[in-house]
Length: 359
Image (cartoon, rainbow, N blue to C red):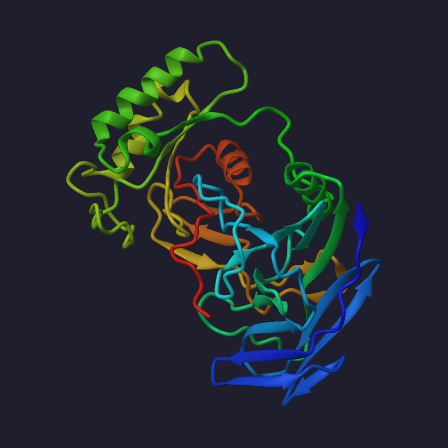
C-alpha cells in the first residue's frame, strides 16, 4: 500500500437551511460566519467546519484531480451490499457512500473517510476529478454550531500496485477502520425478513422464536430474533415507512407480543425480541415518549472540538416505571448489549436509511 496525499480542493459548495453558495476554495475558506478548514493528519486530511448561527447542512469539496480515463469504479453502499456491488465505468452522478475504488491496468486507487465521522459522507467521480459530500445536518435541519468547530470527517487515500481489487479493498478497509468495535462472542440469530419479506404475523414470530430457542438449547451465547419490516400499521408491499406507533392486523398488540416473548419457551432464544425499524426507536413497554438527550460528546478525533449541537447518538427513553438510556452507538451489537443488560423488551435499531440523500 502506498498512502497518497490529497491535493487541495479547487472549489466548495456550501449549503445551509437558507441558501447554497459555490466558492473557490482557499484554505481556510470563510463565507459569512462559516469557515471550512483542511488540516493534514499524516497522509489523511481532516475537514473542520466552524460556524456561529448559520444552520449548516452540507459541505461539498471538489477536487480537480484527473483520474484515468478508462478506469473501472466500485463504490460503497449505505448499509451493505445486496448483490449490487459492481465495477463499472464512470457515472458522474453516481452516489458512492463512504468510499470508492478505481482500477486501471495493474493499479488500484482507493478513496474514503475514516469510520466515526461527524457527517454522512459520499463521493462522486469522473475522469476530470472527484467530489466528497459531507452532510452534517442534525436530523433534517442544518446544524447550529454556536461558535464551535466540528471535525466533520477525515479523508484518506491510497494506491495499490499489482494487487487485485479484493486484496486492495481488504487492506484499505483496515485503514478506514483502525479501531473496530468487535463483540466478545459471535453475534447471531434470526431475522424474519429473509424468508417472509414482510408477510408475517404475530403467530409466525412466536413459532419461529420458539424454534430458534430449541435449536440453540444449552448455548451460553444466546441468539437474537428480529421482527423486521412487517408489523407496522401502514405496512404494504409498495410502502414500508412509518408511523411505527402501532401494529397492523397481524400484530394487534406489540407490547403483549413482547410480554409473550418473556415466556421461557421463547426467551431461551434471546430473552428479547427486537422490532426491526428503519431509523426509528420503538419505546419499551409502558413508554410514553422518547426525549432526545442534547448533550454534545467531544469529537473522537479532536478533544477540543465538538461534533454537533444536538446528536441522536444517545437518548433518554421515559417509561412509566423508569428512565433508561439507549446505546451511544447505532450498531446492532450496541443495541443488543444494551437490551440484554436493561432486561427490557424493546425495539431495536436498523441503520439502513429511509432513502438515499438528495443532492
